[in-house]
Image (cartoon, rainbow, N blue to C red):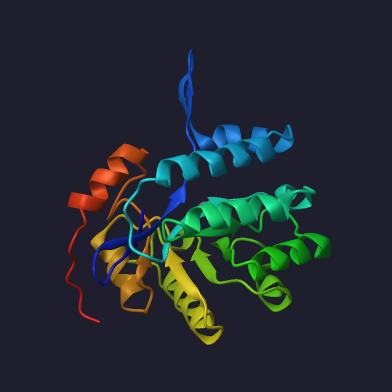
Length: 236
Ligand code: MN
């Protein structure tokens, strides 16, 4: 869940994948996603996640404007049928008031051609976020070269933010950068009230992390929407 800390309500989700292996048990995504990327299976895996999300959300009751975020590898944008795939995704989610958002990391280089294809998707109404913001060497160049809607502050800056003044300065700068560029900013990996207060007091109100909610299967999420929204009281 992606939570607005002002009212404690889920404003969206990030679609995550886990692998329940018959012999190895639950395989962590940081172990199998890099292999999927190397072996060219990441594109069919991502397409599977799109379809799964469409099924999962087909009967979900969410507020209008609710966002479903997908992690999409750069390689995905070189597929010929990408625009029709995303139009299908956009229109199917639009029927239930949900907007798709694609999260792009800076781990791999985005070529000008890929940037152009992402921009054409953005013009089709697909929201775009830069994931793990601040960890790629080209973060700022991306912001100049193509338009995005959201920055997701990498969790590595947030782990020790309650005590680390360098992290505090970096996070302040990212939040201010987002504000100046009129972008949304999301803090990931928030687990404690101290971490929450650090980002909230700096003007970042959209939160992901265990403090509000752990990753959960879709049935649990439906129950979560009905019951578990956590009310917080933090002074602005
Ligand atoms: Mn992500």
